[in-house]
Image (cartoon, rainbow, N blue to C red; front, side, top):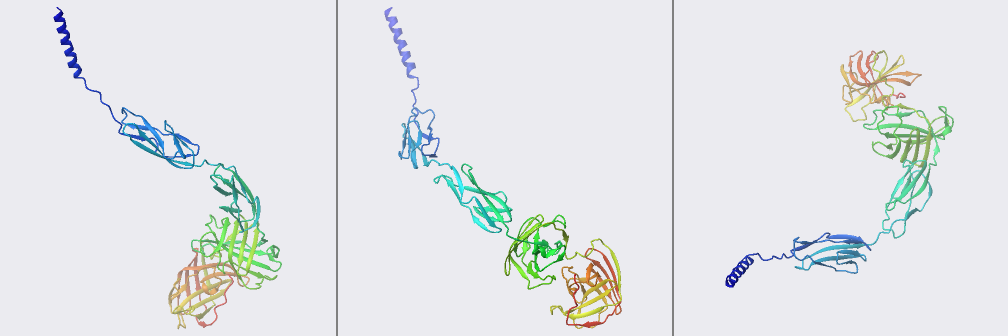
Length: 492
């Protein structure tokens, strides 16, 4: 019985050994790498942050790591990856796995702790200056070692005084506040600026003229000012003074009776808006006597700025003979003063007959053309007819036929009128009414059409600039008269 039991135990032991030898052995996973949560980092002196190390693979048997710094005087690191900045500079923090000696690094830049701005001051708290005069404000940021000393500048009234990087410029008479503001802390300081025009008071002579159609793509206004202001009172010259004529180019007005756009008009050449024209025929100064006659030569405007603010005009600049400053503040009326000012815009039909007149040839258009100017002029019943023909230089009589109105100046044509901006009789073809001798009242400018010339008369069928129809019959003298002097111009 005992033998059977012993044999059974032996069999059981053998089975157990057999099953035990079939169980798989334990597998140990080694570390393949390590990765830090930051590769570069910037902190201030005294600042801290924590680096996190991720060991690969995630089921590695031994994830222990160690930490080190190459510059312990700049940045330290503890056993938990906490880094602390000690001094300005750069240090490299390294993590190393105990299994496999795998590493990763983080470059740490330690900067100075920023010093906050506590205030700002200016070298001026109040300043007076003239129009176009400049001065510079200097900002002092506190404390002296503040980290960010950047500032911005602003003017509450840039129409009075502007500021750019601390440089202040007077624009027109008035008061403005210049403010400096720190970018760090938004600290501010102010300087009160008073702009003193120091201008001689002027009065406006007549109306402000808007010169419609005179300059392509520009909108000119003519403004005439007289100094001293009491030299011109109630529409009459009371004493000797000075005439100032300014032609400024505005932006396009909504209506032809609008005042020019407000702002600064700079004296320069060109036809851009906000320009004061320095053409000596456009902007100039001259003295006049108590009788209103010119006294001395014309002095062109050479530099400066003309200012418009609602109904106020001012100029600060110079003529060919020195600096001037004038200002006008009061009502003004804007009227269309362009080349077509005297022609009615309402389309009409005018039937006129002229029974007398003269046909005068005085030259060959300055020798530039193979033609001569031939002026038919007639004054009759309060009307004046002017027709500028171009005929051959050697012609002594009209060649019968059709003469078209053009701007070509070709033989066998009539000059197209450029409008009343040209005051000379010899530069336009027109029919106009006169009052009190030679004071022009209404003008119809030849724009297109023709004249049929015979040996006895001339029949004009003309369309004026604004579209009126002119049926004119001339039956006066057809004889040519020679003259070396152009016909006397009418006052347009």
